[in-house]
Amino acid sequence: MALDRTVGLDLGGTKLASGVVDPEGSVIWSDQVSSKGYSQEAVIDLLADGIERARSEAPDADHIGVGIPATIDFARGRAISTVNLGLEDLPVRDLLEERTGATVWLDNDGNLAMLAEAVHGAAKGARDAVTLTIGTGIGGGIWLDGKIYRGSTGAGAELGHMVVDFDGPPCQGNCPGRGCVETLASGTAIAREGSEAALANPDSVLGEMIGKSGELTAEQVHRAAVEGDEVAIGVIETAGRYLGAALVSLVNLFEPEVVVVGGGAMAMGELLLGPARQEVRDRALKPMRETPVMPAVLGPDAGMIGAATLARIEAEGRG
Ligand SMILES: [Zn+2]
Image (tube, rainbow, N blue to C red; front, side, top):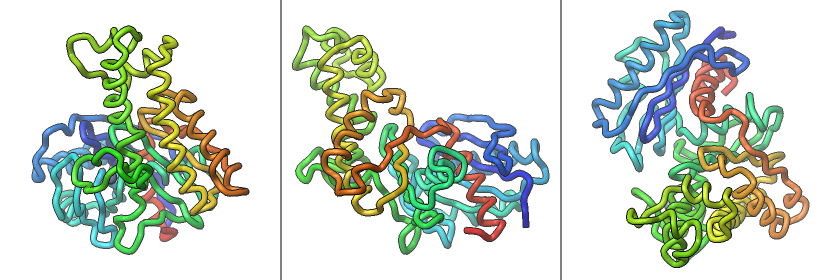
């Protein structure tokens, strides 16, 4: 069955993106609403409303993909556990199908951003690829032999929780780990390390920036680095090297054709990606050290495009 248009939803910690997407991955219609502070019941209302808005634009689109930042039981369509949204073993797929009458697939947002890049983006044409999405946390996905690798129940490929420093900082949310790459290379990590470096170097641009608030954002650290502040550049470089350490393990394990790095932190571009690439060149095995590390090309729509792409692949029976 070849489908014309499918619907994709991408639920994040602060916003829900809904969209109608064509077979080439082009977004025909989309919108965004706030998702901050919603209860478990309200999240289902929010998602059902997002589906209805998209279907009012494309009434023929009754195959829906939904990405959420959670560990997922893919076969049963359940969200098992989330860091930001307070969902706990919730049958999201069944609740949405009851509410909307559409056919729904549920997956992890990192898997779906990866799927979008693998089918329509920077890894297009590759049979094996790895994607990391760096924002507040780090998500990721593994494209193995032309399919999403999900593990035995669908909770797999939590690449942000690869340990790159055994005694490193405690991880975020419900992860009991320490030194996960998410704690050392995410936007949150850059903000934390940048704030510490600012307080230790009061005469730097970063030191002046921190002022009375005592806390910097990752964007501020980036801005200081662009202004040439060595302290800020050092903070981002260190994060990039930790990112690189994770990439070394990933390329050694999977020998992908390409590694794609996306997410909000990629606004930092080569400041972050350059040191990561260098680690891969210096520390990965041969021939994996030659693996190209590319910026994502689909930007903030990747998760939504990936969700719509999942619905298409599953409905067409290629999944
Ligand atoms: Zn972790």
